[in-house]
Length: 146
Image (cartoon, rainbow, N blue to C red; front, side, top):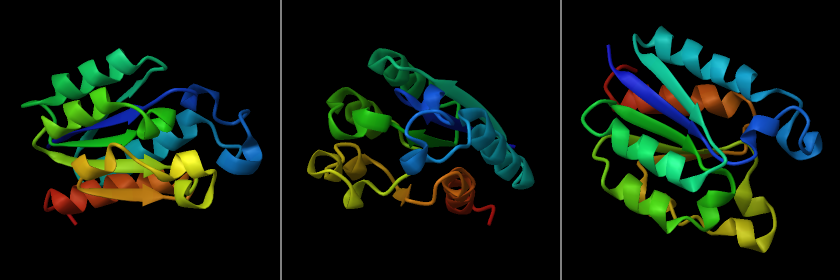
């Protein structure tokens, strides 16, 4: 059994009430529950960390080195600005999946650039709550468990 680390960035704790016309009415707990079920279906454990603080996310990525087989990360707004998170992901050698509930490419111009994209294995975006399951399934597939 491998461990998959699920990271949720700023404002994701507000899911269910924050701009439901964009992010849906499901809560972060709903999304994490789907991700956990997908991980367990592939024989893996899932750990979840949510933080509104960039340094907490960097420390979680660093702590996953040599401990977790994969990271699924929804960096929220840090997607577009956090070179610290990008650097931490670059130093992590496991499978990395970038995740977004909405499709940043179809939104405001500033959301169309991801500074973390160059350091991840792949990206799942635009599928709402289902994206959490899809991202974990993609990570499991890269781990050889598809």
